[in-house]
Amino acid sequence: MKQTEIAIVGAGLGGLAAGLALLQRGHDVHIYEQAESFSRLGAGIQLGPNVLKIMRHLGLEAQVEAMGFKPDAWRSYSAEAELLADIPLNRRREEYGASYVTIHRGDFHAALVDHFPADRLHFGHRLVELSQDEAGVTLSFADGGPIRAGLVVGADGVNSAVREVILGPEAPLYTGYVGHRAIFPAARFRESGFEFLGNEKWWSDDRHFVVYFLDDAGEEMYFVTGAPEAEWSHGTSFAPSSKEELREVFADYHPKVQAMIEAAEDITKWPLLTRPPLSLWSEGRVVLLGDACHPMKPHMAQGAAMAIEDAAMLDRCLDEAGGLDGFARAFGLYEANRRDRASRVQATSNANTWLRTQEDPDWVYAYDVFSVPLVEVQSA
Ligand SMILES: Cc1cc2nc3c(=O)[nH]c(=O)nc-3n(C[C@H](O)[C@H](O)[C@H](O)COP(=O)(O)OP(=O)(O)OC[C@H]3O[C@@H](n4cnc5c(N)ncnc54)[C@H](O)[C@@H]3O)c2cc1C
Image (cartoon, rainbow, N blue to C red):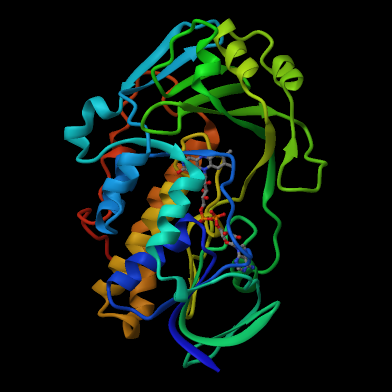
C-alpha cells in the first residue's frame, strides 16, 4: 500500500496552501483531489494583507501582486449612492506590511497549483472512507487506493467527507441568501460614463452588491451580490441567473449599479451556506481546515483567507510541537490558536456588517500568522 507522511484531502485554496507550507518545511505531502482537472471558474476573490503575507512565505507574493488589482480603498454606499464609508486598503499598505489584492479566483488557484509539484497532486481521487489506528490513517477513494498516511488534513470544503467521518453526517445550512456573480469587461461598463476606482459595496437592508477589478490593468470587473431567496430548489451548486432577475432584485439601486448589471452577460447565482462553529477541529490523526471546519457567508471576503491562515498556522504548530510525532500537541495548539479568530470572522461575516460604516479593519488585515504570539492549550 502506498504510504505518505501527510495526506491532504482537497486541492482548494486551503489544501494547496497547507501542501505548499508543509512541503516547504520538508514533510512528505500528497494532495488528493476529487476533480479530474480544474477549469478557470468565473469568480473573483479578494485577498487581504493577512493572506499576502502568507503568499510571501510560500514564494508567491510577487506573482499574485503582479496579476491582481491593488485597490486604494473600500467604499461603501447606500442604494442611493450616499457614501457610508471610505476605508483605506493599499493607502495603508506600509502599516499593514503587505498589499490588498483583488484577483480572478481561477488565476489565483492556478498559481498555487503550478507551484505545487505535479507528482504530488492526485486528481480524480474522491475520498469515500477513512479509518485510523494507532500507527496511521487508511484512506479509500471512489476510484483508487487505499493509501496510508501518518496524518490527514481535511481541506475538502463545505461538503467535507473528512468532517463527515469524524463528526457524522450533517448537511450545511442554506442561509436563505444567494450570491449572483458575473465577470465583464470594464470597457463595456465605462460606456455608461460612470467612474469606477475599485472595491465598492452597495447596501440596503437585506441585500447588497459588491464590485471590484480582477486584474492589474483594471480591464476585467466582477460583481457578487447577497440577496434573499427563500429556498434553494435547484439541487445544484449554482444555477443560471439573468439581467432581468438582477434588475428586479436591485430595482431601487442607483443607476451606476444598473449600469454594472447592463454590462454583465453570463450571470450565475450560488446558494450561501454555513454551519454552526465546530466543537471539534481534529480527531486522532485527522485535522480539519477551511470551509470543512468553519464555512461562512462570504460577506467579509475572508473565507479563503481563513482557510489559508489555518494552513499556515497548522504548519507552524506542527513545527512548534517538534514535527509529526508531536501531532497531538500540534493539533491542540492549532485549534487553540485558530478557534477564536475563525469564529469571530465567521460571526462577523454571517452578520454582514463588515465595512458598512467607517470602522477600523486592523484586527483582520494586520494579523500576521507567523508573528502572532502562540496561545497555549487550556487544560479542561
Ligand atoms: C460567492 C462567494 C464569494 C467569495 N468571495 C471570497 C473572497 O473574496 N475572499 C475570500 O477569502 N473568500 C471568499 N469566499 C469564500 C471562499 O471561496 C471559501 O471560503 C474557500 O474557497 C474555502 O477554501 P477551502 O480550501 O476550505 O475549500 P474549497 O475551496 O471549497 O476546496 C475544497 C476542495 O476539496 C475538493 N473535495 C471535496 N470533496 C472531496 C472529496 N471527497 N475527496 C477529494 N476532494 C474533495 C473540492 O473539489 C475542492 O477542490 C467566497 C465564497 C463565495 C460562495
